[in-house]
Image (cartoon, rainbow over all chains, first blue to last red; front, side):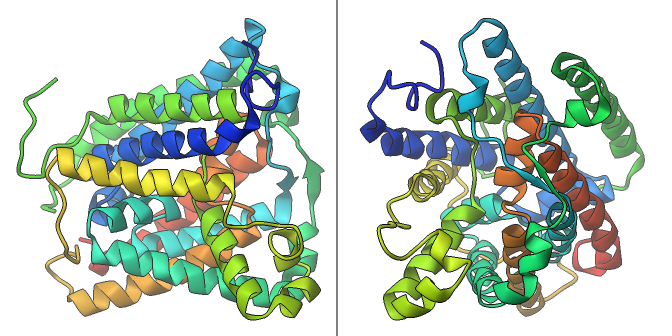
Length: 197
Length: 175
């Protein structure tokens, strides 16, 4: 079966939302069971007492991107049917910086705040509530931000082509960088004073 | 696998957690042709709410009108269903590992009130930034990285780089 199986018509589009619920459950389960429902565990990555975010995030990125490369190599996925986020340089950088500020103030990102809220963390629920206000403010001030929102358009540019190398070679560098970070994290964690949380 | 401690302190090995998360993300691309997300569901809910209260305002807005208004059903959307699944999946994990508890988690050095004020402001700022960047840590960074999108990598570096600096500025809140 050549994926994505919904848009290639193998499975009726009516099933798409059912799969959305099931995939979401896997997503929520993976995040919560790894410890992403705790802001103090998440933020530990920046102080060196708990690197769970670094480990889970980069392992997941490697598994998914290598998996897609394999499926593509075997002819099992049609890359042109995958949704690839268009790149707008200015808004990706400025938006990322703003998100980074919110991340370290609240200790969550949107997905992890939902997991925290689901198991009864009130700080997670409040973060989620704050997001609704932030989205509303952005939407209402869109006329002021419109220029920035659309500037620096690069289309659906791939990072390997920005470096002028093949996707496979880039993925090799990604794996090497991640493994290096995992060893680095283990080394730092030994040196850092334990934090009880 | 180690024996599961029922006092809520047991977490999966992070590499195993990462493999599960990566497999779910891979399946999401293979089945639905798209990555996972979170902030998009908040955006659609806000757009749907504003559309109920002030439909004309939505039609005139260059932003809302992309997601709500005539012929658009922002609440019957893949991301909304996916996020309902996220809440259910996290809840199930909370039951299995005995972590269901109503509480405010914060460093013993700060009050609950301070924690809640900072998390409210953090959520607000994150929500704003996620709209500008067209997605959050899940939809823009992680899902973008899986398909080797340049924007995904840029957003990831910007989020974690800034968060690292700000965490140290605000370290009294955390350590």
